[in-house]
Each structure stands twice: as structure tokens, then as C-alpha cells.
Image 1 (spheres, rainbow, N blue to C red):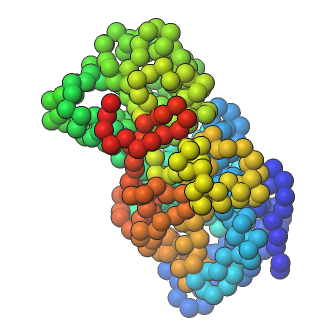
Image 2 (image 1 turned 60 degrees about the vertical axis):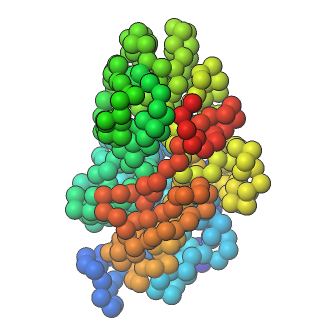
Length: 419
């Protein structure tokens, strides 16, 4: 059967309907083992197509980055499909179809979406944003042996092969990002007082743990205040006021909620507290967060990255960036300059999946997981110098290396030193 991409909005990009997915793969069963010759195809893959599912926030406070997780993958495989499809390791060429599901960053909806994916005969879940939402269906994915891979969470649980045999994270674990901040600050040599505000869950705890481990033994760094907030909170004004009284000159804000990050940047200015900031990679967008938050008022905003930023003048004519923006507009239904790094990350997810597809010898989930866990030193499109995809290390996600960057008013530039 010759399948072609259907035009339309993000929800329809490179997608097939449930009825079509069922007609293609509903009669096939999982091989149930590390396949030998003649193993039956797993659900969601035929001789001509494979269907992937993404449950991610497409509405609500995190809809901006959530839509990017669909747009980037759709752009990558939309272009691949238009060029004739992807050649798999079994010698067959297949189109890659994407089905997206809105979970509004609600774990219960995410679980329901996964159950719908199973009914829709999706081969694997991928690229979805969020720790609580991905955790919500992790056990079910393991029980039903459905790959849940290259997901947008820095939770190390997803890269622990023993605990999560059908999972793999994509972005660096929280500890790696927090550690990068700590190392930069510790090597500055100057005395610094640090205030910390963190999300009261594994996300926030992971960032703080990585930061504290990196500054351990550094006599020039002292943590003078710590506060937490809940992901459901609508304000952190009280915490900021308390932390401002500490006299800290560095603020480590381990926050994942876009509106709260903007409000925090604005509130700190209102109360006259202007420290240097450390922000996680997923809440450091120059256009969506820093500009409306008035970040230029601070002596320095630091984040980490592994992706080229299309907004940066340094990458304006970069061949990877030019190609990415063209395909994002043409196949990802995303005509604007990406406001969130998730657009670039999910495009890289597409390249990583393609590499796994090229190496999987049989049309089964087992063969796919084997191929996925054997990728080393892949320089996916848009990756910064010094970073690469490596899925061979147990306990680490596909991308484990980051580059610390400093906001320059338009985008970011690599920060060799703090200050």
C-alpha cells in the first residue's frame, strides 16, 4: 500500500487515522522475544510503513514546547517520506507516520493517551514532553512491551536499563545540567552566594543534586537560601521575596513551568533583586521567556544546550539550521522561528530514530530496542560542537553532554567562564 503524508495542522502532520493504522497492523502480533528468523511483525509496522505515537502537551501552560515535540519529528520524517521513505535494516523502505495526542501536561491524560496508542496499534511512543506525564504510563509500557523512547525528560529512571527495559531518555539528565552550572561557578574562583528555588519533584531535586555535587568542596561557593514550589502553583512571589533577603548574587531557578519562569524574572526585578541566573535548558527560550521576563536587566542569564539555536546570528546561515527551518515550515506546520529548543531536540530525535531503523534487522520492537541501544557518536543535525548521541551507556540518555551558554540579548553564546 502506498501511504502519503496528509497535510494539515500539527495534530495531523505525517499522521494516519486510527482506522488506517488498524487496517495496516491490527492483525499482526508482537514477536515477544529477541527475534529469530521469521518472527512476526510487532504492531504498528508493515512492509511499507511504521507508526509512532507522541503524547505531549498541545494545550495548557506547556503547549509551546509541547507542540515543538511534534513539529520537529514531523518535519524530519515529513522530509524523509517526501524523499521516498526510510530504508530499514531488513532491506525494506518504509514511510514513518506520526500520531499525536494532547495530554495537557496531565499524567492521567497521558496514561489514557498511551492506552489509546495501544488501541491504535502504534509501534512505539517517542518524543513526549514531561517527567510526570512520561512516568504515568511507564509501567504500562513495560508491561505491554511497548517502546517509550527518546522522551523529553531528564529523569534518570528512563535511562536505567534494569528498571526501564523499554525506555530511553533523550535529553541530558537533570543532574548533568545542574552539575554543569556548578562546575562553571566553582571554577570562577570568586566568592558567590547562591539562592535556590526548585520544583518539588524529581525534576527539581535532580537539578539541585547535580549542582550541589559539583560545588562540593568549592570554598568560594555558599548556598545561602533554598525554597521549593509545586508544579501546580500559580505564583512563587513569596519564595522569591524570601530568597532575595539572603543577599545571594547567584540564583539557581530549577523551574519547568514557562509562565512561572517569566513571572519570576519580572518579580525579582520588582523587589530590586538582580542576581545572575541559572535556568534549565527547557525554560530558557530567548523569545518566549527571557524577553517577556525582562532578562536584560540581570548581569547574566546562563543555561545549557546541545543544539544550535536558529535565533542566534552565529547560526543564521548554518546549513543544518537553514535545512531545519525549511523542513519545519514545510512538513512540521511551524512557520515561525522556534521559540523553544524542543523543536530542535525533536528533530534530532527523528535522526536518532532513523539511525535505529536503519540498523534493526527485523520488524519487531525487540529488534528496534537492540538497534536503538547501539548508537554511538552520532552527530545528529543541529548538534553543537562537542556533543553527540550515544545510547550505549546504561544510566545515561541519548544525549548526556551539554555546553553552558550565556544570554547575549538575542540568543546564547558559549560561556567559557562565569561573569
